[in-house]
Amino acid sequence: QVQLVESGGGLVQAGGSLRLSCVDSGASGEIFRLNTMGWYRQAPGKQRELVARINGGGDTIYEDFLKGRFTASRVNAENTVYLQMNSLKPEDTAVYYCNKWPAPYPYWGQGTQVTVSS
Image 1 (cartoon, rainbow, N blue to C red):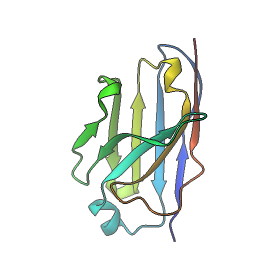
Image 2 (cartoon, rainbow, N blue to C red):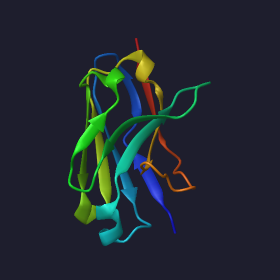
Image 3 (cartoon, rainbow, N blue to C red):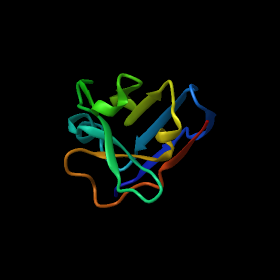
C-alpha cells in the first residue's frame, strides 16, 4: 500500500530555509532503494511541477529555475527523502509532494505547505 507522508513545511520569510522530509512507508527497503524519487510542487492555480529528482544512488537533477537553491538527499535505510530549501522566494510558495519519478504512484500524499512571505 502506497503511503507517502511529507512534512517540514511552514511559513518563512523570503531568504529563509526549510527542510522537507518524505517517508515512503509503503515500499520495501529494496524497492525504495531502486526508485528514483521526485520532489514536486503545486502552487495555487497552477499545475503540479517537478522540482528535483534523486535516484537510489543519490544522484540528483534539479529544474533550472531553482538555480542551486535546493538540495535533495535520501536515506534509503529509512525510506526517506529530503529537500533542503535555501534562499526561499515568495514564488516558491506551494504544496510540496514527493513521489516516484518518472512514473508516480497513482496515490499522492497530503503534501506539506510551504509559504514564503516577502
